[in-house]
Length: 230
Length: 130
Image 1 (cartoon, each protein chain N blue to C red):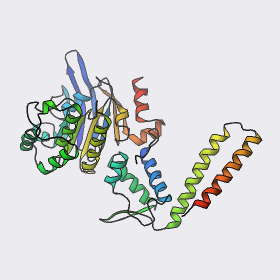
Image 2 (image 1 turned 90 degrees about the vertical axis):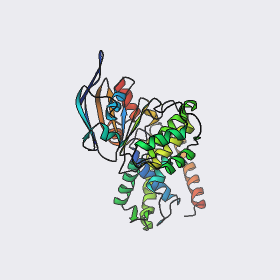
Image 3 (image 1 turned 135 degrees about the vertical axis):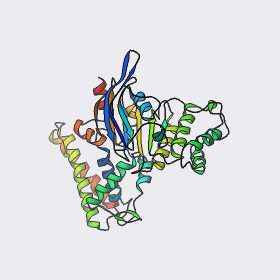
Image 4 (image 1 turned 45 degrees about the vertical axis):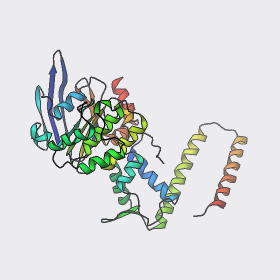
């Protein structure tokens, strides 16, 4: 298992954001974590990215407890803009290149030109779509073992979405790299996912192969989502 | 061209059908190289792991074959493609019959439809160049 999560619980004042979550992800999978806002998706991602610690339970990436070591193999793309607004795009990428092993600046330039991001503008002035594209540049400029994408397509117009998916599937080293992406808009990712986990109120309520679930339930991932939310 | 997928059915089965249809229509010719897993993933916006599974299943079916380091190719066995054509036609006929069967048609309308199908199918046959 590339990722292993065992009985994770996370308490915030007055609420259990995660209430006993366990699962494993095999190397090379494309997993979707689906749930409404407040289901605990972002908390789970922040734990996997070692931004925050669980109250109970353990999480490992490549057999190592999440922490400094695993951060160097994990590309975490949070829902909010993770970059410095006052930096210019290229400065930001050069800054990140220092930290992430195997960063390939030629690859960054290639991706930026494909995604039409200018390298000399301040990040604070980028649109939401441009920021989402820049996160993709970050994810695929270096050979991350694990790519965590929290709501990667949220509020993005169709042309930007197509470019992002094209880059994602053009660059994703299938069989080697593992992707976990979350969304509360299941229709946006219906065809992108291989495996899915449905979360509700800090717990996993259903999980499995996307195609197998379609077969068993006779409906789409969106249909299953609505049933669960209902 | 983006493939229209029905999200309520397993995606890998629909991609398998799409490749077979393209071969039957002659878009992928017998013995010709198929797009790479990555190319097809980008075209269909289906994740590459699922496309890789499709190629694996098609190979197990004997519909395509793989040359190490060169990619995947449509079977050189043209009877295999011809069989697939008949199977796809059968499936389409089945869907049509199920739909029309539920409409309680009288003999008159039934005859009109049968005539029309006969005419259109033979028109098609004159245009066929396979």
